[in-house]
Each structure stands twice: as C-alpha cells, then as structure tokens.
Amino acid sequence: MRRRVCIAALLGIGSAPLFAQSARVKRDVLAYSPAVTQTARVTRDSIVKLEKTFDARVAKIATDVPFDLLGATRGVYLDGYGAVFTAELSLMVTPPLSPFRQTVTKEEIARLRARKLDRLGSLRQNMRDMLVAIASSLEVLPPNEQVVLGVTLFYYNWEDKTGLPAQIIMQGTKQKLLSGAAAAAEIKTQEL
Image 1 (cartoon, one colour):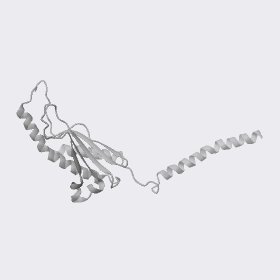
Image 2 (cartoon, rainbow, N blue to C red):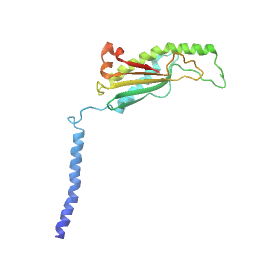
Image 3 (cartoon, one colour):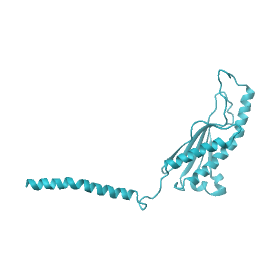
Image 4 (tube, rainbow, N blue to C red):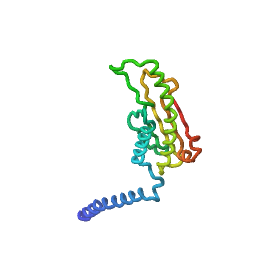
C-alpha cells in the first residue's frame, strides 16, 4: 500500500510540471496568435522616433535665430486614449541676465516680445503639421484615438509676456487629422 501511495505521489509530482508547461505554452500561443490579438499596440520605438522628429523640426523652424528647445520632447501612448507628446521651448534663444549683463532696457524687452510674437505663427503651423505627421506615422493607432501635442513656452521673469501664451495644446482624432484639407479645421487648439 505504501508503494502505491509513493508511486501515485511521484506521478502526481512528476506530471504537474508537464501539465503546467502545456497550459503555459497553450496560453502563450493564444496570447500572441493573430486571431486572439485584436489590436496591435503602439510601440515605444515608434514614439521615440516621433519625439526625435519633433525635436529636429523645431531646430529647423528658424535658422537665423533658432528656437531654444529646453530638453527633449517626450511622448507616451495611453491605451484607449491616444498618443500624447510634450515639449518645452523658448521662441528664441534669449541671453539671460548675468554678472556681465545685469539689466535689460525697455527697448530690448519690447523688441524681444515683438520677435517672439512674430514666431508664434510658425510654431503653430509646425505643431499642426506635426500632429498630422504623428497621425500618419502611427499606423496601429486606432482611428478614434487622440493625437495630442503640448508645448510649454519658457520666459524669463523680466520679459513682457503680454499676448504670449504659456502653453499651446493641439489635438485631434487620428481619423480627422488624416482627412486631408479639412484636417486643419479639425484640430482643437487651446492656448493658456
């Protein structure tokens, strides 16, 4: 009797790993099967490529006095919502106050504000273009999900910020962004 219990116990112990392996293999095969996987996921690699694309686009907006990108653009995919990208920049490279330059004249402040106001149009246009580029690049993004691009603008505390936004946020669904000429009208823009 003791032998039968030992053999049964050994068989039970010996068969458990085999059973567990076959169940795990079956589960893994089903998880990666095209029939079971209903939607492809947006990969981190595709997000990184788009981050670098936006950084390069910002660098090329103005060659005489470039925009000042403060850090790299960051993107994230939120399952069920869409792709969100954020960046921080100054509309132009602005020399800070220092021991060698301790004051800024009112004329310099007014001239700087006027130049930054002029550059807002090209930033907005590049943001709209980038939204469409993101929508067309992320092929696996479902058509009803959002593409969002938010840019925070940096200013020194001595600057005149009258009429200049602190943030520009643009968004639209992939489907509407890829609708051709009507895409610009479908972009929701918010300036704070």
